[in-house]
Image (cartoon, rainbow, N blue to C red; front, side):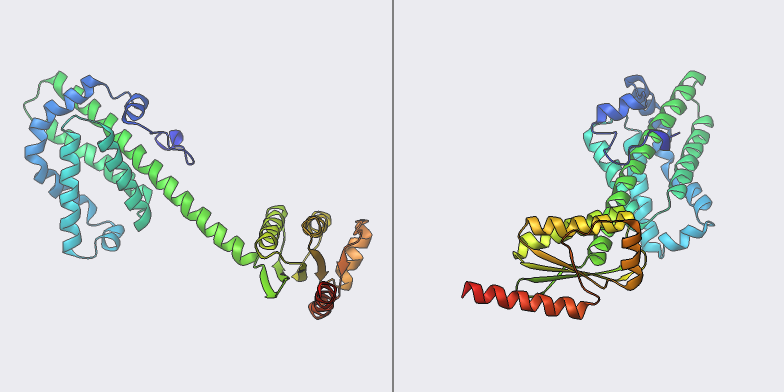
Amino acid sequence: MVSSIISTSDTTFSTAEDARRLFNVTDSDLAALKRVGETVVPKIDTFVKDFYLWLKPLAEYEVFFPDQAMVDHVKTLQREYWQSVFEGQIDQSYIDRRQTVGDVHARIGLPLGIYFAAMNRAVTLFSNILYDSDLEADEFVAGVIALQKVASMDTALVVDTYARMSNEAVMTQSKAIMEMSTPVTQIWEGILLLPLVGLIDSKRAQDIMDASLAKIAETQARIFILDISGVGVVDTAVANYLIKVTKATRLMGCESTISGVSPAIAQTITELGIDVGNVRTTANMRDALSLALRDQDKTSASLG
């Protein structure tokens, strides 16, 4: 239920009021938590002991709790967290602390399934403590309902932050991979080279154009070589994108050459009926480099 309401792009919980409203955490709920806290907080050590009796047999325990110092540190944080829950006060500071927990869990790679299970176990243990107390029936029911609401809210806060951090990591990795897959390099003054390897889809083709035009603008290059000798398949979409790249570079005052056009690729482009227009092509990169250097010499001579 929690995962169905989580936004993976923009957080759903911008303020404490938003979080409380989403989970219907009322002032009465917070008051109920504060009342039952008088029973629960003095027994917090019993809760922690029982919680780790449940946690220790799990395989993840050895991974995320490598030594006793780490266990003791986390136990201290856990006591502080639940004591803050039973204070019955949810403000922006409270929300920020929950989001920090999500941030930490994302960075250490804690599986979300374990976090869900741990929160569920905690609510069960606290409910048992309350059930064994001298609370009136209505106080017990109100306290458990309030605890479940706040635990669900806190879980959603953590998971929302976890998802956002994970998405940011994926985007960073994707950007790095994109930059690696489109390595536009200045090989000579005024000459850029982009060797392509592997398959090219529409997304990568757009990345190629963006990276190429950005590098041309940065270096003020006059010559651009696009080597496709390492490209396995050239279909209509890929061919059209490559031609668009050369036309776009020309608009920026940079002459483009597509090198590595094999007989098979040349035949494919011809059979597809793609108009290559004035696009310069060479059979290999050596010819493209020779052509680029000749153009460079002509440019230098004309300027001189």
